[in-house]
Length: 607
Image (tube, rainbow, N blue to C red; front, top):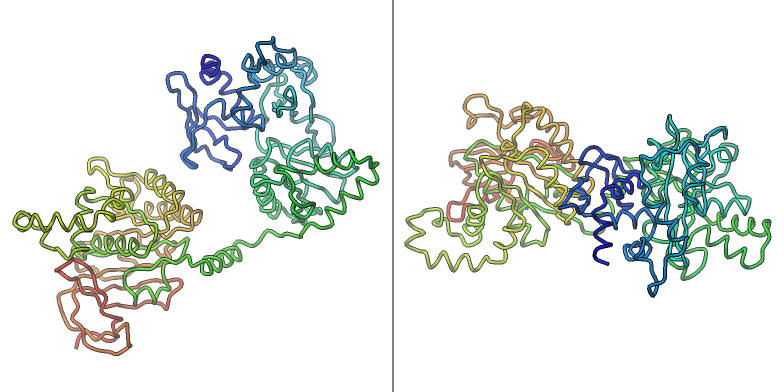
């Protein structure tokens, strides 16, 4: 059996033909993800030949698939079923394979580049159990055909797609967007039911109900042309499983973008009956009615009883979606704070799906502030990650130890030698945090600075792991041929996509634009390298200003009393979309533990 499995997993022709069956876009060694759970419009997967073992690795969903996995997707079954149904692996007690299984093997393994003169020639050669023709609107030509094969003994099913070319028919899906099934009838009807799979369309046709579907099952609706449903009354009848329900939601979003928008109603499978089996669908419902001896009129009436209970749905406007999501986040307690209470209150915390910029001149202690944020998130139970690009992981953990243990002297080698035992004990006290830091802090080799692409990939991976707060310090270490403004625009745009997808808070640390003495730069948004891009994209913009020690009147964050405070830093809040506008906060960089401490909002300049 191991030999047979190897022949499957090492068959490159079968590997690529199955990718074609799934409608994957293959571009050299890149391709779209084959998983039905991943709606991948741009290739995010890579093809690997591991000593002949063909695999696909998706960078986005971080999953790996070989030929057996691909066949399971294509056949609508699982890996064990694929193995049982493949060639001589389907033997029972050593008996010879029946002709039905031989036909299945031919149908599955026929290459996608083989050309037949007509669709009828394909069907005669491969002999499917069912064929579903995807006609054009006028029923003049078939744009695509899906062949269904029922595995021997009712052990599942599998599909192959074929489409016309200029010279005949080939075993692959046509270019996207794909047609939808039953388009001639759909075009003439004011009411249409969308189901998952051609079998459901055929079943509803027997009940005199106009229905349609898109090719290749759940998760692939985005690849079809749904324009023929614009302005109609549309019922979505999803399968009773997570993939089917998600497919239904995807359809709601797609149909809501049509013009004129259709009136959309979604069937809730749980309203049909209690304890429905997984994957129960419209075809199962019609089959049950037929088994009960109902005629077409009775079945039609029962179908419309189900459809009458469907709930109306509208594609929500993007702005309203954002507000609703924010309300849900707040109700769920999805909040992330900064280690400075007054600043945190002023900006109303770090909101999900937000981008924050922190600028400051060299020596303003921005990187120590980043370490302080990491420690704060650790102690408040917030999942965090950081890309700290200027030093090694050992140096970053040492900084954490300095702040946690108030051991500033650890940065001095002479003192470290004299107090080595104390330093070791201090490191042991922060062992949990040190292990966490080693896992979630990303550093880089200065000889090979990160690229924008590597930053996006890492941020997306962190989002998939549940990270809620992420720091990149400093952005100026990212290698790019773009000028600072273009780099800032591209980075902000793409990182906001990541933040929106994973409900993250992303903090970018950067420097003032180079215009002579950066230490004397005025804290304004225009003074930030790439400032105009940040003004456009960022939710919060801070400028940490170094200043000589002086006394400044500040509003005490606890009781609101104004009193003189010794300051050596200022935090300028230049922008806050959810806050109370620009403000200045008096800060103190404490040398004993190298932390930045908040003194209060600046009430008045130096007295």
